Image (cartoon, rainbow, N blue to C red; front, side, top):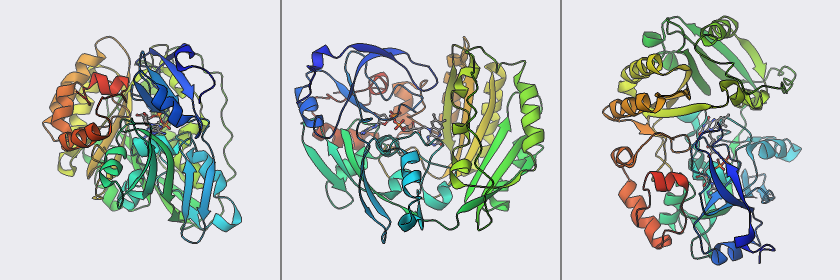
Length: 442
Ligand SMILES: Cc1cc2nc3c(=O)[nH]c(=O)nc-3n(C[C@H](O)[C@H](O)[C@H](O)COP(=O)(O)OP(=O)(O)OC[C@H]3O[C@@H](n4cnc5c(N)ncnc54)[C@H](O)[C@@H]3O)c2cc1C
């Protein structure tokens, strides 16, 4: 049983990672033993929460209970011969990277480290996250062998491709709406070399020069940074390959006291981007894998540089043949509502792991729009135009979509709903995201 009656858990303010979608909720950190009792006792709606690194309103519920996995941080089993780990949902990617430094595990690495080490195993599975290596490795769910899920009935159920397959496919990428993932069995991948050789090339004209570089520079990790703030849309292409060369010493974490003023704004951004373009266009470094995967973790709280109103993270994916049109639409939107840069990644033809998974073959664009008045009108128009190109939107980031957009972009939505309704017939597991988008309309 939980020590505090659920009705006594105080409400607290909460928001997405960039400070958008503020709300109030009751957060209850759980352990493996208190979970079933809490879910069964709870008369209100509830939603799981991991590290809180999502930008959307997916990881909390107003006037409900937000069950946090942060007390569930044990690595329970490891098989060094087959590269399998079983861990609790609150273990982070950073914890796993550190764990894999043990001598008997150094032949293995994380398949999808994502963009920050603070993501939990539960959040990575529920968001079916991706990295800069999608063509090589697919998304997170492609490496999850099995999960133990606490469902709305208060029972813990194992699911995998062979057991409760419907629950497995609805839970991977299912945004926590099928139940609380308690444990995950993850397949690691062989570590090809202990370091990564990071190189870059300038892209003087991003509109025409970006996409072919993904073919011209085949590499384990690839991504393009594009300057959206300057008149010339140019960028830098980053590509990294495994190497046996020794990495440079790890970079220090920049614990700068970043004040919450809009340091990044339409006047400063072109100058900052000019410096980034100059400094980053010809990089040639050997770094440890974590440094290549999680560069933003070296600047904690960088989101404060967007000021008190924060920023709107917007991520979409278009089919390969629509890449130039997608970029053109994004550039036009960025001229109306300021967005200072975007990041482009390519996704390969791996089968989507879950029914609501974001990843499918194509190019994905992530842009950070300054949260100014009018930004949502611009993004609404952009969303409509991207949908006509066959776009899909990342639910861990979205704060703009409406339910009609979801119906048009999630091709397996009805199948997902039918499965989830069987596991949660009363619709007790809900988030602000699921209510905004009417994901579970029963
Ligand atoms: C700096 C930065 C860089 C990022 N880069 C990338 C990137 O490159 N690629 C990418 O895909 N994403 C990226 N993200 C987004 C992030 O990876 C996802 O939002 C991820 O889902 C967050 O995991 P979390 O543990 O913080 O979960 P939360 O943010 O707490 O929750 C995310 C979702 O998972 C559900 N959930 C969490 N724990 C559980 C559980 N135990 N059981 C069931 N459901 C659960 C929640 O209900 C919610 O719907 C980035 C985020 C940041 C802040």
